[in-house]
Image (cartoon, rainbow, N blue to C red):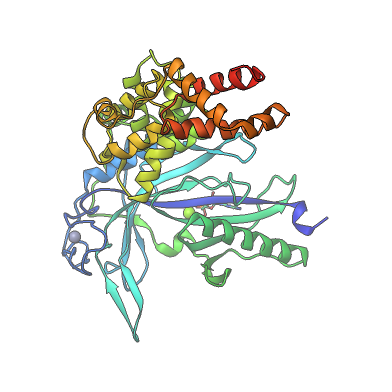
Length: 469
Ligand code: ADP
Ligand code: ZN
Ligand code: MG
């Protein structure tokens, strides 16, 4: 048995997510990313003495949305605290955060497991805080400081140590994440000494850093050593984590209530209003796509990976209406393949996709009623990308209509069979593969317009009739 197999990792995450407010948490400076350094700065976020913070209500709204989406308990009263530490890009010498009374406690998020099951990861808390500025180290000998990010609102989501594998990562987004990890012998109930991993900016990195650290901890324990609570920095270039500092305790930060900010009171009507404005939860929407639209799980996952994709898909289905029993699957096929291909290639926002859901629906109707084949539809789709015209009008103008007249197709089939005696012999001698050759010839002769189902039927009848014409 490899030494790792006797152990079980225990992981808890602290996830920081930027909120899409237009102004900062406690002043009216812009949160815009990528502006000239130190242009979005005022006395408040630059930490000048005497400047007073004023809470941005959007920050509270976003935190409430997250809390309600994660089934958390909303605190009727929450307070801000100062978390004191020195850093050149933290001009106040403290970060405004929440400590004793965070805005949300408890709750859970659900994750998908590799075996297809789902697992609830309990949340400890969600709190509001502000970001620090940015130190830029790689410019010559100096370190430069950009304060644009100072005061940009964040929420921190802290999970219980419920994860049991580096693969059990939480959903992706615009976020930074610290991972806390310990190991214990399988079957043990108590928790081992944890270390905290920082500086991972992608989920791939979180996974790799955790794998590295789990191996290291097990090795230390196997060799009879003991672990120390510490903070480790992940080095993505070297694929190692090295000690940054021994872990500071909460007391090191000298947390105390921020005297400049009044407590936040959230009443029931406010909560109800935020709840009513929440979009359908992506997991619930995915389940609905599977159960109500009867989509395969894969389709439902792709379509609900972005709200815009799901909205677009559902708009198509709605327009197709109940008269199209397979409407959802056809809509899904077109959105997942052609629409998302173009969206990806051209980096488009699907809400601004040049073909509206209504026009995709019209195109699908033309396929379903036999006017065009799926093959022609691909050409039509390409035309529609550059033309606002109604799909039906394009089909008529470009002569894209599918040939479904059986007697006309039979004529073409007769000609093709007559022209290719050698292939006919092969087919009748039992070489079924030659059938594809005939289909190809008929398609060529009709410039791709023949209805494939009818071609197949007529051809089969003709060839299997054994010599009779
Ligand atoms: P700290 O005081 O070091 O910040 P917390 O108790 O606040 O520790 O927990 C921080 C994070 O560490 C949480 O996500 C929590 O789930 C996780 N955690 C706590 N104890 C352990 C442990 N023994 N092993 C793994 N993760 C843990
Ligand atoms: Zn400011
Ligand atoms: Mg903590």
